[in-house]
Amino acid sequence: MNLSRRAWLASAALPLLGCEPAAPPLSGGFTGTSPERGHLLRSPSSNVVSRTQRTRVLIAGGGVAGLAAARALRQRGIEDFAVLELEDQAGGNSRATQLEGLPCPLGAHYLPVPTDAGHEVQDLLEELGLRRRIAGRWQYDERHLCHSPQERLYLRGQWQDGLLPMQNVPAGTLAQYRRFATRVAQLQRAAPFALPTQRAAFGPVHAALDAQTMAQWLAAEGLDDAHLRWYLDYCCRDDFGAGLTTVSAWAGIHYFASRHGFHAPGDEAAEREGVLTWPEGNGWITQRLAQPLGERLHCARVIHRIATHRHGVTVQALDTASSTLEQWEAQHCIVALPVFVAAHVVADAPGFLRDAAAALRYAPWLVANVHLRAALHDRDGAAPSWDNVVYGSRGLGYVDAGHQSLEQRAHGSPRVLTWYHALGDVPEARNALLHQPWQHWAELLFDELREAHPDLRAKATRIAITRYGHAMAMPVPGLMRSLHKARATTPQAGPLLFAHADWSGYSVFEEAFTRGHLAAQKIG
Ligand SMILES: Cc1cc2nc3c(=O)[nH]c(=O)nc-3n(C[C@H](O)[C@H](O)[C@H](O)COP(=O)(O)OP(=O)(O)OC[C@H]3O[C@@H](n4cnc5c(N)ncnc54)[C@H](O)[C@@H]3O)c2cc1C
Image (cartoon, rainbow, N blue to C red; front, side, top):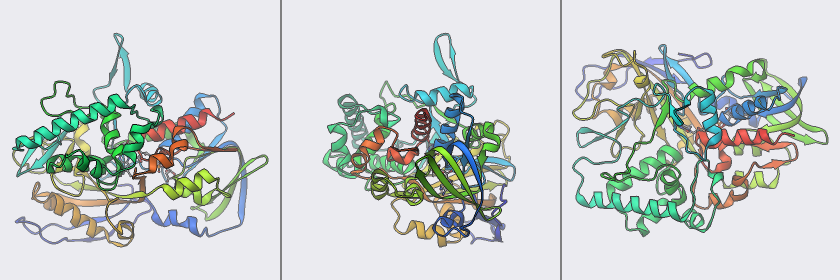
């Protein structure tokens, strides 16, 4: 496991769970992000500039948006640029690690096959060899599409195929699934929805949806079935970091309408959306975006000031290895930082940046990678899948990082499971992330999965927990209207161009990548 900056906390035997024999010791700790480093922003330790460097374009932040900007500059023949990144590795929320030698995601783990509105992402996938035109039709490389079985749900003591609750649900539930599918299709016809969002003009239908929570919209529609509501709440927590009572109806509808709609069981058009995924999650992509940058990528740099002047931009960053302050002079700066960070570090922040920072609310997240010495026993029903979710739980279940790897699927071999927990609805969650020990989060994980996998604790040997205090912008009611102008374009203030998924009001790969790509197109 790559734990260069993180010492493992002492191994500890967690309490005995279920009827399993005494649980063997479990070692664990925090990894992946450095809250302490992020907090250096508030009080940089040095004010004396040790050296000044020059570049044509400075990219602040090496997440998906920053890496996409770097790629687009190179495509345009602009090689004189530098990327400054806070962490030791580029990729932001889309990074990967290894646990006991097995690759696994630290955050984002999949990319749905892009629709035609996402042509920048389509181009990238073609460049990476994932998409090819064969006999006039685009086809994706089967090795990188999620292998079957893709998803399963633990419901009433059994696993069922797919995440929409179906097993022994009453006829009334099925009727509400059909009604919801019809409403999504009607809204798709009434107004455009696209991914990335800026490809769909924002009109009165969107504004009405944006003005209420998804829960309010469902209530007004008489869609009150508990199974439907749980499923939609799960989808919202999975994509937006918070559930139905927090995110807007725009977000809840966009989730389906910008892709292939919502398909009720028995719907002839029903198709499972193609998903690209890798054992290391979307880190597979960010590693490939970062690799050609070589020495132009400067990690472990905490940017604490970006100031514009007559001749361009001055950026100051703390080099955490040497604890010295370095200064960069550039003609342009692509600010690929989260909006709340950008509003803090940009001197004399423009009004639109201050307004966006005031409007945005962030969901904290937690990701736990658990190493198992052997495969788990399985309950009845659907076979182990890539994505495995427990009905009624507050977590998001786990992804089997080895599902895409044929060797790792060999029966009984060690494996890593990646468990996700979105905390946007949980009061004081950020505080809890900072102060609770890793054992607290490990207990939460074992509690959620205990019934489905009674042998999980006994087989777990190591757990690596990644905390995200400000993981992603939550599309709360009113946000799309507040961000309206900035969402439709690349926000710009003189030599500063802003690119981050936050500017879309929610965070997925397609939004971040397209924003980075388009910002780089604007460099004169
Ligand atoms: C747990 C989790 C799971 C997710 N799963 C998925 C998924 O499966 N599929 C999907 O499409 N999306 C997923 N997402 C959304 C993900 O956020 C986006 O896909 C994408 O990675 C966002 O990229 P970005 O560049 O906009 O932002 P970020 O990832 O936030 O990038 C910003 C970068 O700026 C750096 N930075 C911040 N402050 C400073 C500073 N002061 N100085 C220097 N650098 C700084 C950060 O370290 C980071 O690298 C997930 C997000 C999380 C948190």
